[in-house]
Image (cartoon, rainbow, N blue to C red; front, side, top):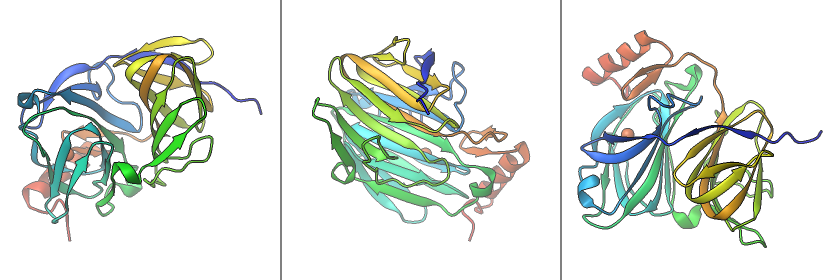
Length: 283
Ligand code: FE
């Protein structure tokens, strides 16, 4: 079977947003421009060396029904939840939290100055897994698989399997995500197999890409949605760093209520009620 290269269909820049206690960010998925890309509900990009932009952090708040993925490029964040789970995420590290039935957590900068840079991604859970027990997969930079090619390409494999067989430490058999942080030298090409039933996007951290057979340009700070095919393919016009993220679409109804994402409005109301009655997490 000949491979089918995905083309770059939609480009979005996101919108400036504030969340938590005044943290400034760019919301690229979960905005009026791009409400969601099944199963991705939200994608936030934060980057500032001004403490006032991030120092308030994200004080205690609940989640139910999906997964949150925090990946840091610079700085430190301390995570704490109501079940006593606590840890610090540092540059190059990932925290993959399956909120499932419920989590109440805080995410606070573990620094008072300097650069804080990273991403938060929300990945939806299907109905059958929305009320599963909360779970964490946390890996420091040195625990994330590194793949290096002779042409200078370097890939931090957070989740999924690359075409050369490198396997990321985060395992998720629900949406089977691919989460790659790729450094691509100028004029070099990169290819990644994806399933026909997955949705995929690329976010350019720096540089510029030419995507697909049509070589459509994707610039720094842009998110590009790649559609229809079993292969993602792009070339770096300049030395580039990017995230390539893909996961299986769920094709289920989505009912959002702030920190809760369920299938129906009634289930969202139930989540608010459980939260009020201290039953979010359950027993
Ligand atoms: Fe959160």
